[in-house]
Amino acid sequence: MPTIDVLDLSGKKVGSLELAQEVFGAVNQDLLWEAVRHYRARGRAGTHATKNRKLVSGAGKKLWKQKGTGRARVGSIRSPLWRHGGTVHGPQPRSYDYAFPRKKLLGALRSALAAKLADGNLIVVENFELKDGKTKPFREALDALKVEATALLVDSSKEQNRNLELSSRNLEGVELVRGSQVHPYHLLRYERAIFSRPAMEMLQTTLQQSSPRSMKTKMREPEVGAAPAKRKRQRAKEVA
Image 1 (tube, helix red, strand yellow):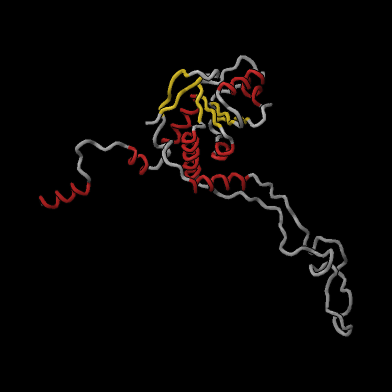
Image 2: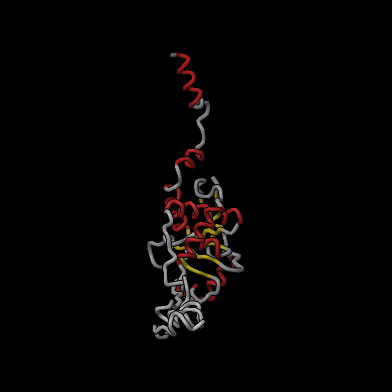
């Protein structure tokens, strides 16, 4: 099992945490792409609108008679063929959200965590206990954790850390989310992901329980001296 160092806010090692192989295993790039696409589609406003021929201004009277003028026939000045006429098949208000299976979302979350660990951008701290809600001391703590660019802070969802919210909300490129609200898009958007130990343990347990059975069987070590099932069936047939 892989392990990761647990640090305090001063950057010193205070322990270690075992990581489940089912969670921090392979990275599925296609699944990550699907999760990001769904997240961004769900966030689209969809308020675009164009006016068709029944919405544009203009009378509905026929401009001239059908025949005898030598001109092309026309029924309304609001025709899409005319200037200031209606728009044909233009965009209308709609929702871009669509159903995304929960199993695929959890699989993408496992892949995002595995990618962060492989890149060395995953940090686990013992806790986010701060004396006050000042921004400057927390910025110094991020510098001690070697956070140079953007960072995602993931805290436990059991209790509210008001000092962490106040000290991190004014920092550019830093976002705070609860452990139950973290999304693969968040992990891919920010360079560093900083988890509190309780948040990582809870998230790891959830993802480990939801991992496919085939992955659990693959990660499980085989028994010493145990014959494959196929060979056992062949031996049973020979004995019979």
